[in-house]
Length: 423
Image (cartoon, rainbow, N blue to C red):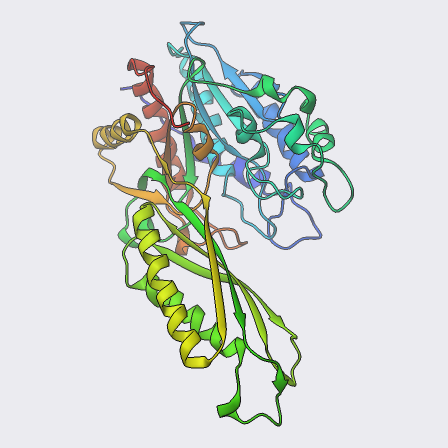
């Protein structure tokens, strides 16, 4: 097995340095995609790739930063490691960043050990994984998998009037030739992504490594609650058709439905109340909801039970409720070969691990459409993420990087080129 011994001091130095490239006017560690801070992070990562890992560095036409280390077989497909440099508003220091630094560290160690793999190794910082000012996320990985075209983005603008093609060009890409960023199984044998868990399971079980089996399906819905506007002071409690009171029951109904099933989570995170006046009984409430689970049948069953609850609430309160649901994001099942290799790698290293799904989306979800893809999770303190309190201990990142590097070595020894990928 390839022996990878990550340098914790170097990893900590890098992550804390990137935490300085943030918007001083925003809370937390804010580095929104396409911002000046995002561009500075790309420039700093470029310098690290070139000077410390001796990678050949370029930005593809989609604005993805890629550092490449050649292999002994120059015609072989690459092993790719990636994640992202951008953050959500008021985000943390580790989401995305830990994965790119881990990939960089693997490349640095290979250079220091003077080890040349059979396959080329590529380290990628994908453009705009988080929701961008243009209303689109995973911009770079979408383009790399052929899901983005110049025609599909030309009309997208941010609140400053800048178009997405202009922003991609400012990040070093060439939006008129997005098709050149498209990759396939013929030139990527496997894609790996180390990421903080963003949830509590690893920490609660005191397990240092999560091997991700897939990314959950997301179903979303719009619920409309139609009651009747009335005077808040003159309408007796028994005569009211309060849409907001009914909506409160709906929130609790979704919570109870999901608690009654295993492996599913449900959230009502958006609610618009009309007329939204302190002295008027609300006559209309619009609700935005979502469900997440790796098993679409569990989602379908939960929706069916939830709609039955809506009927009960409607009848008991004398109001009208309509509910429309749809699949927002299909599930992704990660490659079984990589999951098994990752498990075997942890066994050889005598590192405990847990198989678990990801409840959040990642660039790996797109890459899984064109090649073998897998993810490694490391614990998140308190399960916190997308907030300034987001934290992962550096010894966990070191251990995850060790697994990542050893897994690269195992993939390099395997003949796993043949694969049917999801359409």
